[in-house]
Image 1 (cartoon, one colour):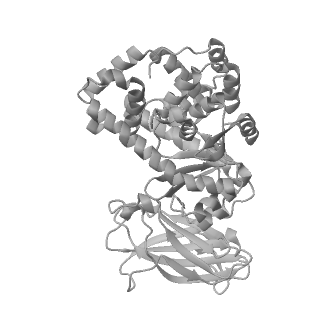
Image 2: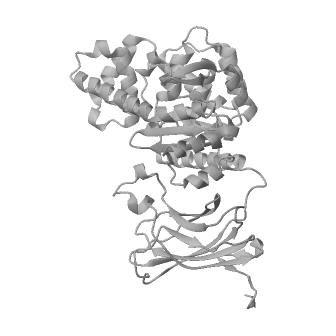
Image 3: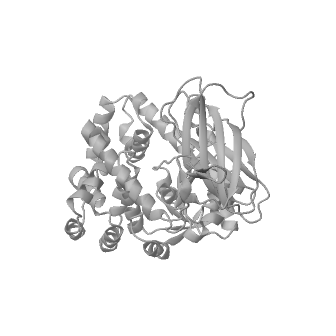
Length: 474
């Protein structure tokens, strides 16, 4: 990554001499690929040169397979007149010159926020599925509230579909409009797309990579190549960094490139960033998330976890539309002996109510021998209705888990069927025999279901209603 090829080659030779390629992580492999594409001719004398060349071919082939899997979906989006913009690795893929030196395992594309549902419908119709394991009907129903969704198809298809370019707290949708306005048209696999200007791509690299800097170095490599391009507008870049409130990761990334890799960084931009540094608490939260994991202590790992947890909670609070939250379902679990005969089901029909009310469910399923989260959805043939998760505290082998749930139910107009289904926690491609016990959809028995119209949601407590029309107050 060093700006001086001689220094970069010396550092790479030293690293290869002290590391076993068999132990390299996927993120390290991608960084090695970038270095090999830049320095390969001078490294032919290395004993591992054939393996490095093979690694280059393997990652390049994997990237091409990914792009081939995604191309029909891109063409379908264009046919549906859904504007697309490429970011991160996909932006590099739009450049035939940069494509050879940048591998990626997913493609990031952005569509207008109000077209995310249309784009998601196109992908689902072509057989793509959410990597989270959520049903397609649920994702389509919630499309107006989603900021992004990760989709899988086949062995290599992996797309991050974004309705917003940045995370919650990193500017507004109005700031995103400026990125769209500056983007230039490009052709990507015979499909017209937008490509952000290099200053916006540099800001996107910092905003996304700086929060999980330990995951890979692709974002830092992209940043280093963008800031040395002729005509890079440091004023525009610094304006956007300040607008996005990502000063801390920007100072860390640019400071490292200047001190450790020899890159020239605009002094005026750094002065603006240093003058805008946040208070100690916000700066500390950003710092512990951006620093490499290799150098952190157990105490540092705990601090990073706390900072990341707080960031996630703030992002969730900001992204959740006000006034749309429904009362949370009331859940109660217990363990018992014995299971009903049969194998259980993945889907069970529910009574079709004609008005809003409270649905009581009694579900029984085998207790997992591993701690895991259980996901259930209530769906209809019109749209998604509700979802809830169960987290048993102490898994017990050879026992049954009893789940009692009371949840507010409002059947969508036009629905003729309503059902309960268990959902996996990963897409089908990610499930293996080794992780099935933790992530696969569990089979269950629906012991009973009862619908009570016009029941007050505030009366629910711990899976049991305080008031019972037949028995009075409990």
